Amino acid sequence: MDPRQYLAAPVLLAGLFSLAPIPSRAVAPPANFEEALAGTYTLPDPLTMQDGSPVKTAADWTTKRRPELLELFEEHVYGHPPALWGTLQFEVLEVLENALDGKATRKRVRIFLKEHPEWTGIEVLLYLPKTGNKKVPCFVGLNFNGNHAATVEADVPISTNWMRDTQANPPRNKPPQSPDTTRGSEHSRWLPEKLIAAGFGLATAYYGDIEPDYAGGWKVGIRGALSPQGVATEWKANEWGGIGAWAWGLSRILDYLESDPAVDAQKCAVIGHSRLGKTALWAGARDERFSIVLANDSGEGGAALMRRNYGETVAIITGAFPHWFAGRWSSYANRETECPVDQHELVALVAPRPVAVGSAVEDRWADPLGEFLSAKNAGAVYQLFGKKGLESELQPAVGESIGNSIGYHLRAGKHDLTEEDWGQYIKFCARHWPG
Ligand code: GTR
Image 1 (spheres, rainbow, N blue to C red):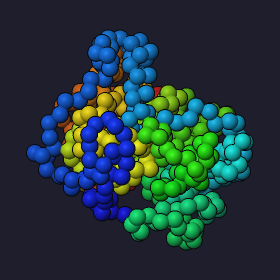
Image 2 (cartoon, helix red, strand yellow):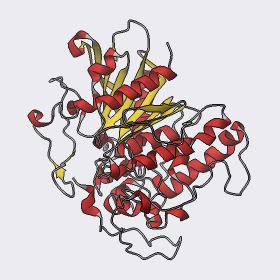
Image 3 (cartoon, helix red, strand yellow):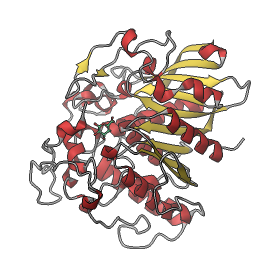
Image 4 (tube, rainbow, N blue to C red):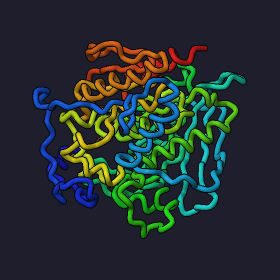
């Protein structure tokens, strides 16, 4: 699907909220790709509380500003998730000791809620290198096309859940596909063999297990299940959207990993690409058990600064994908400066844990410079902890990475999660997880 199809999409939810006198059907201006027209802006200061008082110490950040910013991101961008979900249960469906030519143990685990059988749960595909009794560090990420697409192994069952049809615009609810066409189709984004060889485990799950990615998908996903009104729910402007739901799912996968004695749950890095890069960043910002956060080509609503007018904008993304966010975020279409937060503060919410942002040069829709500037401007918070962010004022050369506790790399090529990106993320994690 080409998101540019949505350039003139109306912002349906704008005007529902009385935050400002905005038109009820704001139209998204076309995306700008001229750096000279990206506009000027002043970023909100992560080190100033909303009442104007300064954030001077790491303790001020941890006890006051971090909770305040999390609340602001929930209220204005991603929505509040529910506080309770009942009893989480795990069912180990398979343990295969000789996966990936004998180099890995493969597990399949179903995560579900005892009190909500109407939600079918999350099936996790877990590959772990053979390390004897040594617990292994793990990458944790959601995939776009089903677990059978993330691997070339022929005996990983094909997902029977809703699939996104990338040919259709808008995406339609597609019946399960034949294994012949989708098995391994996302292998190049997950490369379990490479991760295993580097000594890492991989836990991946299909994002559609948590909530199918279309406007009414919540009705059969976790949001519908957990809402007291079920499918009759009328979402309030500050309640969670799809990204909030998928991020919730990532935390439930981590709940399972904490219970698996083969996994080093102190070394679990959350990773995602594109809309799932936005999701990984939000999950990692909220859930401090993720010890490293990796956001690949995450763009608008991810690492890219919303105040920069370059590539996808709030108006465009909330017009095309209103179900991803809290309804309120669409009210900032064409008036981003009114939003109390910007995305460098989302990156900063990971502090003091390491966070890496990856961009691709040709991925102009995601605004690579905006992703860099966000990572750069999160640095002030890391400094409170005596940690270094990006010391350079400039993006690195293509193919290079920079940074310390905040990492950034710029890859040649298009919007994708590639072997080169993985090389950068493996290097970043190995540096922060010595031993
Ligand atoms: C696009 C959207 C981007 C990005 C991408 C993806 O259509 O405009 O923000 O999320 O989808 O997830 O593939």
